[in-house]
Amino acid sequence: MTTNELQAAPGALGTPGQYSDGSPQDTVQYLECKLILKPDRFTSARVFLEYGELVAQTAKACGVVFINRPLAVKPVFREVVFLDTADFLLYNHAFILRRRIAYEDGFPLPDPEIVFKFRHPDQQLAAQLDVRPQMAGKYRIKFKAEALPLKDQVGGYRLLYSHNVQFFLSQAPESDRTVMGNLARVFPALAALNTVADERVHLVNQTIVEEVLQDLGTLDFGKGVTAAANIAIWRERGTHHTLCGEFAFQAKFRRRDDLHEKAVERCRQFFIALQSAGRDWLSLGTTKTGLVYRLKGNPPQSHE
Image (cartoon, rainbow, N blue to C red; front, side, top):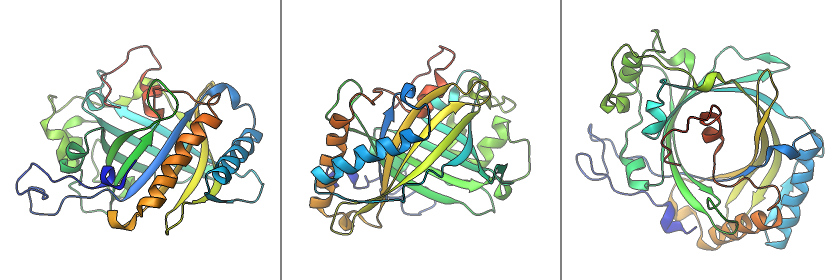
């Protein structure tokens, strides 16, 4: 990846680089690198530390400083569900609607996090899609460049651009939140979809995902570019069937110019080297979201 691949593209709605109300378009401010891992290795918490050791070894070989956490397994548990129509209208148009509930000391926190995103390989399309919700409550916009391995081979990368908004459910308007007409009023970006107002969204494939997330530490690529690293497993609640694992690290920056080319190149080299070093771990050609959508053997149109 290069810093040019991370720059924000000018828009095509209204004045270039602006949304319809004159607000400047969002720019990419996160770089997140992800590796989807095969589910069969995740039989105990020790696997988290095992992969962490592989990360540390690869980082050292690439000249990347890895500041690891104390060797104690203290994973975070979260519940994740995706919401869509019966025919996957949102996902077929590159939208994702997700609800996530964090747990503390074994008990769910009372205010779920809602994430609405548009994820697409075309950076300009992702940038010009205004994901801001129509609501009085507080929300946060994130625009990420997400690096994934190539779909069919180890040793490269591809980029998806994830333009999303997140907020706590308590901030959203009180209404029937499963009706598409109400959702389109909260998320105007959905208004262009061919749907009827009383159509409803449901749990995708009736699946509740249990996420077990372990922080591993911080990767320092130099020139002020650091990234928090973690590893997680996704499994179906109830059956405990493991869907996949995921290793990810994310760097945040205010402007593209904050990313020194040498640091980005070191990041690229590490990401590719880790694929090679852990090729037996890798599950290519999918995302966590994609796995949930394909559980019942009815694959949607994917933009991922």
